[in-house]
Length: 458
Image 1: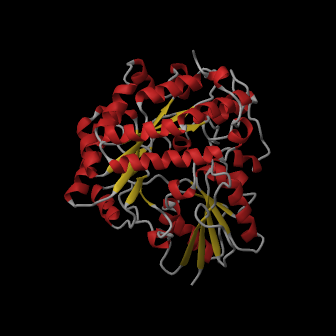
Image 2 (image 1 turned 180 degrees about the horizontal axis):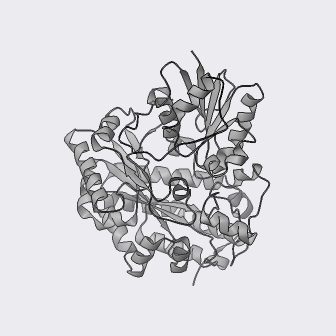
Image 3 (image 1 turned 135 degrees about the horizontal axis):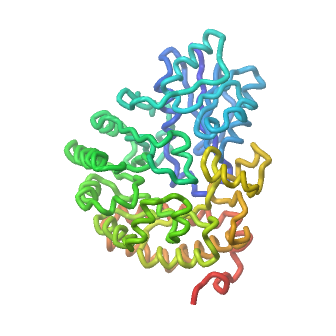
């Protein structure tokens, strides 16, 4: 019986939060395991929750995001040096397969499920190739991921995927670079049946946008949450959606009743020039209509906490963006705040633009990929120095995570949503981000400076 080892490497910095609060099971490897013929013995290691230790294997599969790919290459070399075939897949190596082939034997470009049985057949026949290309097939017959291989006793969250892809075209997003502008839904009954088998009470809906991109997709989402209620499935959900979610009160109502407790929305910026540069046309339209606060309020009044994500430090941003964002977050009562920097991930238009302009800060790849973790600046901004950006992030975080601010915010979440679980989840996410900030290079370098004079508006 051949032994297959599947590995999800981790970036050592974990800049966006701690594993206990923010790690969910890696569905990508669970799907690969599900596509593996039954005569294989499979083990799965997720470095986000357990340290890697060498295990015997006949073939090794490794997935990686850009921020963890260097660690993936290190692990691949351990096995490659022992003559054990190593296969790598995921977004990063799909964008840069030639780079990956310097560190592993085989690269799978694109979605692996359709091509994985052929990879293993070629391995068994002694003719394993260098490059395999998976197609973007219908999700009608997607196998059920092998959750039995996961450390379900450690993960606080379960993971469920109802769709893949995004037709939007944000310049910094690798989802479009990987999938093209495709959006595919899974059959409703298959999704609900899989949900019933997830052991965790809290479930992350991993779709880039649970409500989709049109009336038909919203109807699917409404049917999904309705079916959860009909079947008496009792879970608490975290999902991602566009700001358009706030425009559909019926969908908000049914989602909250079904257990949606917190929704992550990519706000990105309150600067119209920045939204235009990011190609966030949907957000830009709502900003021009002055509807941001209205839509956030509609979601919160419906019983769902609002997790707002902002990408600050782009070329159109000046030092005033940090206080402007802070004041907006306070006045709109955003329950959870995620702050990241524009990160030029390979394959994106931002990557191509910044490389063409010669503004990438570190190019000693693959080691430098460790810095592409969304919390470290990887390029020289147009209007600010690098220290300006780091100081601005420190200023905003210190004030958002202040003790009294946290008490007021948590009480407001509870009062507005009328949902203790939503308030507790929001507090937990903020606590995780706060902990990551307190352990960050930003805090060590700038945390004791008086930044009010530089960033606070009169």
